[in-house]
Image (cartoon, rainbow, N blue to C red; front, side, top):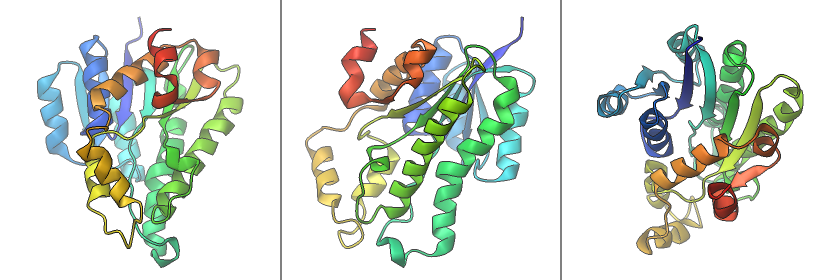
Length: 247
């Protein structure tokens, strides 16, 4: 029987880390990619079944390293979780290279990794893009992030049609405002660069950030939906929690 593996990018912290722990805790082999070795090694030490892969998925070298870590195994789940908020500030004030890096991580990497791992995916495999409300709503100061997440949403829409008949289903998921290192970065922004920063600081103070473990539970349930249901819409944790968790 062919061995299977799940792949999570941006898995050293936050949502990716919580999802890796959940899937590996259920007996899955999970390759977890991230740019920093230390959190990946700590994660692997904590839970059997987690295989760390230090790689920058925005580069061809990093993509090749992740492909090599999968090897000849069949990919069960491919979760594109890696993402960056930067650059923050007025869009027209951002250097071209900073915008290119945002697109490389948030858009190009999911496309490239899906292309590389496509041959390892068969009937019943799932691809999941971790999206954001910023894909659908413009926020001053988040121009690069909003633009790249909007593009990632269109990747989902296009591949949803192009993968019909392959046995592979692609989905998109909005995790809400989650208590992760990215949120710490958001709260540290100057109001002149990100006018809505006080809203995010207030969410933290009021204890209204979602726990990564709860997001991992939601993602796990979405991944388990029938293929047509999984792909039919973008799943929002705030709108669809009851529908998914009790399915």
